[in-house]
Image 1: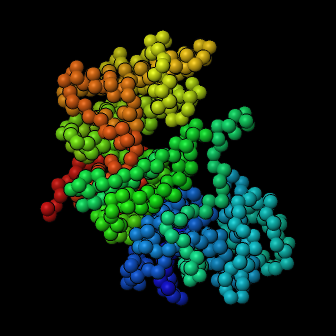
Image 2 (image 1 turned 120 degrees about the vertical axis):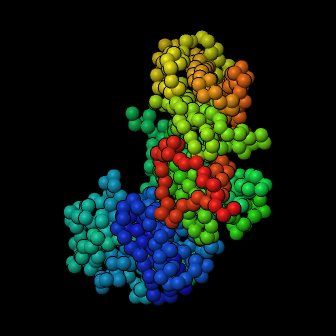
Image 3 (image 1 turned 135 degrees about the vertical axis):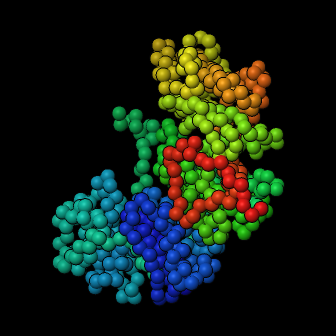
Length: 232
Length: 343
């Protein structure tokens, strides 16, 4: 399968081309420059593989959670590419992609992923590695106050993402887990999104481009007039 | 050449197809008015969330109406600014990536240039040069248009835009959203001469506008009444009359100072009936022609972006892969079209 993946959900920006079991990737930490970088990265991985856009079998993108503008850029790019090429799209959780990335470097069984969501909340999800290499969500992606998270006990666990840096004390106080390894500098990567996306597309669970939307998780972004007056 | 135009700078998603031979082929506008009404104004994040859901369905719709496929497109134009950052970014990401996947050029268009060019979509378009009065929720400007891309701002609002003053005043009077049409509706049965309203900055030279003081004056006036429906009608009528008169006085002054014989009026507020009527009378008096876009192209739309984009793409302008949006972007920074090479 030839699959193109992009991610612009966090401070990181990346594009990857998956050619069956190998991949080519461009990755940069580049806050607020995603729009300037992402299509150039796509062109660059295609050029290196000497592959034309028309040879692609599908598109995967980091759907969120993450920066609202960031995940909308990713969704807009995924929509534009897939619509123009007549392809289906695999929307991939950025938290799942981070867990996948962390599992590829360690042998732990669980990954608790946290991204700082501002407003004293985190985007939070816990993933378990299955024997066939796929990932299972133990706690579904959610936006939550760090003091309210449920932490699994017993198993050895990876603590992944910038949320563990911002709310380290609050979160580690909850881990009774032995052998927790804290990896705050893990970002979502397009190579991980590509590999997870390949499974989605192989199972024919991809979506048409007009159904491609970001996964915001936080939906209370403004107060209605009625709500405002009630508070005052 | 067939160009897809994409507008997403504020609370309307507009998509259109423009053909260099056949003219406008199809256009669609999705308004978010209902989405923002409960909030009393445009919520930028909600606007962006809506745009990203509309872009493909509206594109499919204009293609279907024109019996065309994506492969028939020769270029894509999108609104690059000014406007809401997130809303612009949704349209830009989609437009640039669609063009990239189709291997056709894309060009970012200045939203106000789109409005300036909107009357050129009509049967009898104005020749250059002309004076333009741009009045919308975000802008109130008098512009000397030498040719496409060559603009000189002669005057503009030093505070609120005219449309913004309409919105804020409507809110103060407890009227609905958006404010322009609401004020106009309430003004219909009102007595515009019951209260005295100032015509801001008309008693001194220059072509700049100010509507902030007028808004405050309106609030003070309304607070002094018993706030009966009749009071509301009369205050709305007096306020509308004051805004329109101010626009007319300055526009007339600009026509006289520049000696221009053609006036183009564009932007959302140009749909206001009282203003259209009074501008017609004024231009007749001073011996000028006046040009308005059709009502549906007074507000934001994809047709004006497709048209401006076609002109710029024909002049061999295009964006590279590093796309950017410009939430603030002075019109005067634009450049006149270069002559197409190799034609």
